Image (cartoon, rainbow, N blue to C red; front, side):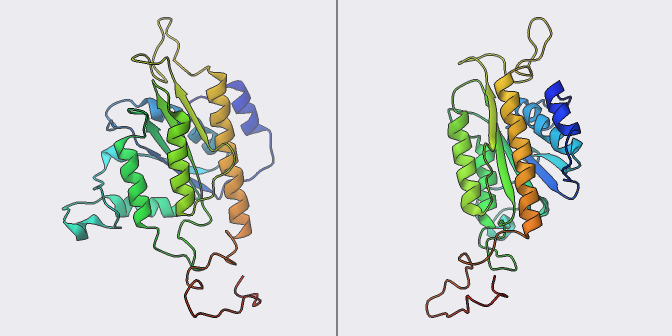
Length: 252
């Protein structure tokens, strides 16, 4: 994926170091990898920005995997023959940045996207070494595409879920593109003159660029700070009858 002139200049003219960060892009299109995905085309803009800045990144299509619906870490223990979530979850846990992409269907995120969010929720009972949600210290954003209204509505649903689970959401952590209402061309399709649809849309490119950079900046801040301080959000401390020495520096 090539960047425009302004996006490329931003990647080349700075002194930030993101080389120890990693990002996972989960594309929740309904299409398997053998078919092209408009959502992935836009996600690749953000991925390219991060890759050019040294962030190790990976793009995964959830539709290529067997992800049973449910809210347990491994649904093979609850009646399903196969569950690819545990392997995908390992990648989620290794990533400083998570970007979820989805098309809009009937004004909502895709069914695949909802399953991914439910499976993320399945891990939310696990704690890190500070007794916080396992997702603390990570940051998340989203990419939305479609041919109907709903970018902000779908973003609201995804970003609310991520922050509720423990992810930090930086400013302007969503971006999207929708074409003319009704059936028509989607992001990355070809115009009659051969030019790709949406690639030169300044609003979409600006928001996608802002999202990518803000995710990198937030991930950098979180990693350098060692995550979120545990004072006031220690789950094990929130137990009836427990007394903790909150003045103890080891607690912080």
